[in-house]
Length: 307
Image 1 (cartoon, rainbow, N blue to C red):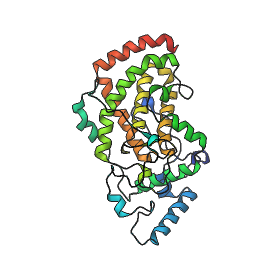
Image 2 (image 1 turned 90 degrees about the vertical axis):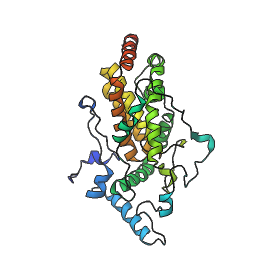
Image 3 (image 1 turned 120 degrees about the horizontal axis):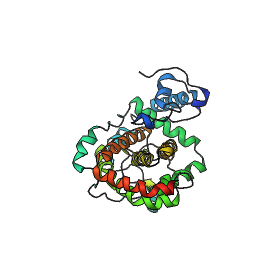
Image 4 (image 1 turned 120 degrees about the vertical axis):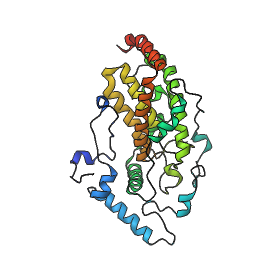
């Protein structure tokens, strides 16, 4: 059960929570407090005021609305592929490549992997309300520098995720490793994109009135987050190649995942599910003889470059 002890002043400054990865070897120290804690325990006065104001406004509405969103029952029932809000400038929309048959993972594992992904929060649940408050809070606090950083991470490539200036890989390492990680991305997307379609959760900006993304908008559903999945998966694979960089690689993956909420593209729970999926896919990749063979060959080639 979630406890209600008051967090330190330092932790209250961070509006998000780091989530425990799969392996103890890769476990970062937790930072921050969850919005669910804020709702249940009332440790953050500003969050209490936001929630109270939203509840008061909903009480005055003529149509039944969600107490936090101001979202009508009609908009709740619309499908994920029929956004209630425009995607904006068509030139500023992200399109994803259609994944081909996986090379390293058996595609028949989809049903097994899908069962390991928890359902997204139910409408009106405390987890859903925490997602909404978290989005609005981060949007209020984000800076232009935050949005500029998030914009560089929109396109999923090894260079954008772990190359300079924010990442720890050199240009030479990126050049050697990029084709291998593009294959990892393709294999992973085979599962990610199908899960998104089946779960059908809307992007926050499609139904939360005041959410305005500060990066290019996505046309795919939100749950689970592909960026969270792939950044965690990439970090785990890279940490096998460069064990001394494990901590910084995982920290960088967390930043990429968190920036998807800060930029208005994802809910916090999308990130949690994506990171868990990344852990699960990492386990499956690690079982593949072909994957391990290619990884071993790349380790030999890149060792001198890494040092």
